Structure formats: C-alpha cells, structure tokens
Image 1 (cartoon, rainbow, N blue to C red):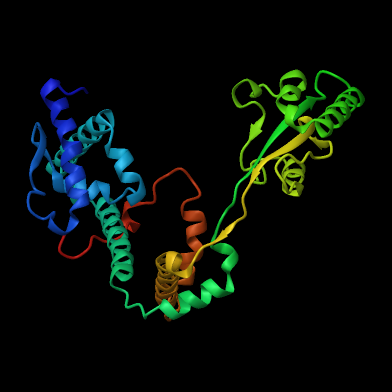
Image 2: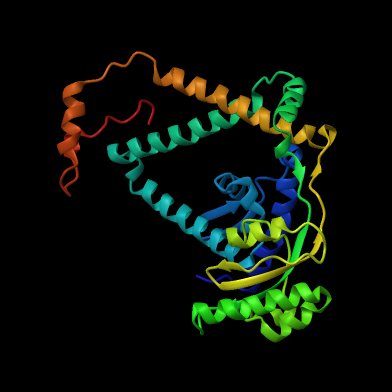
Length: 319
C-alpha cells in the first residue's frame, strides 16, 4: 500500500516531530496522543510510534527514523496490524486460551525488560571518582592518544612475476632509495605496482596500525627518523621498500581529560553487576517443578501437530 501525496508529506513531517520528541523526553508527555495517521477504523499516534521506537537501540533510532520510505512503511504496517487486531477482537480470538497465553507471555516479556531498564536507571551508585583514578593509574596504556606514523612505500608484486624476480627488483629499489632518499617519489612512480600510487604517491598513513600486514607494520615501526629507509619487507602482496615520512610519539592523556569516560564505564560495570546479582538471586530461589510434565515436553512438541486444546494453559483471571 502506498500513501497519497498528503500522507507522504505527513510522514516527512513526522520525522521532524520525532526528532523533537526523542530529544526532549522530559517534556514529551504533551502531545504524544496526537494522531499521525488514520486508515479504516485504525489510528496511529505519536504514542504508538514512541512505543515502537523503544524496541530500537537508542544509537540506531535516529538512523531508522531519518528515512521517509521507512517511516511510510512503519506507519502502514502499524495501521494494518491495528486493523487486523480489531478484526481478531471482533471475532473473539482474544478470548481463546492459546491467544491469551501468548498475550500473557508478551506482557511479561515487556514488563521484565522495563524492570531491567528501571533498575539501571534508578540504581544507587557510589562515588566512583577515587576508583576511577586508581583505574587510570593502573592502566595508563589505555588512555593514549596515538601518534602518527606515515610512510611511503614501493610495492613490487610477485603475482605477475616470479618471487625471485620480484625480490631482485625490490633489492634494486632498496639500494637506490638508500643512495638518494630524496628521490623516493621517483622510485614509487617508476617501480611500484600499488594501484593506489596514482592518488597517494605511495603514502600510507598510520602505518603501524593493524590495518596493515604485520610485517609491513613492524618495518614501519622500526623506522625512527624521517627519511629512513627500511630493508626489503615481504608481505602477501609482494615485496616492499618503505621510507619514513613523519612520526610523532603517542601522548598520554591527563586524568582530568578521561575522568568522565572512566567513571561512566565503571558505573556501567557497577550497574551490570547489580542487575546480574538480582537476576541470579531470582534464578536461585527455591524451585518446585513437576518433573513428569517437564520430561513430557521433549515429546510434546516433537511432531508438527498442535498440542491438544484440552491441555492448553488456562486463561488468566480477569480476561
């Protein structure tokens, strides 16, 4: 189903409305029942959209809703779902034991998730400043601003020639580079088989990172002064000769610069532990199970047939 032009425009307007709602959650109560779209007997409100949005991880919400076609599809699906649900109620399907049991499970699932969210949001967390400083002192290597390590390289591929031929050419490049480091660009142009040389002139930035073959990174790390030339290096691409272009040391971050980051991490760990301890305590409460019925479950769902209605769960009270 496709919306007409006016409905499509409404979907576009919704993206801006949702951006306001999600960025102002404290004041989002007013207007959440505003009708976004109607179809047949069904309506979709901002409250419905908000409820759906809770199923999407916070970091992914903006990307999901910043798409007119996705908004249109979401609203259309919600309207269809509501109309089908209304038909099901009219047919009394919501009173059937199998349905009420599924509804109960769905309600329990939503409430259990909300309880976990509530526990995380309301957890009492002690002052973690001192522990954060201890963490910083004990693991300073985690709080480093990486320096730069930029090299230029000549690649002699051994894919279109023998390994011996490639190594011989690389040795020639190595000799010429060490004799005249300032003419390395000419060697890149003359010898390199790296197709990216047309745009980068052989420059590889952050050459010590794990983006590169370990042998390449190690050779780059061994270069100390700009202009230094590496020995011939073998990687899966062939043979390389490297020239150091620039290098700056890593910088240790100050505690004041990373304090909030460390405290946030420690808070998450503290809350995660508290939530786990609580759920573990629930799991460890005394258990009274009907062992015969538990054992029967192995064969109860062993066929494609639905279990007899007579053994279906009894509807909850009040339904």
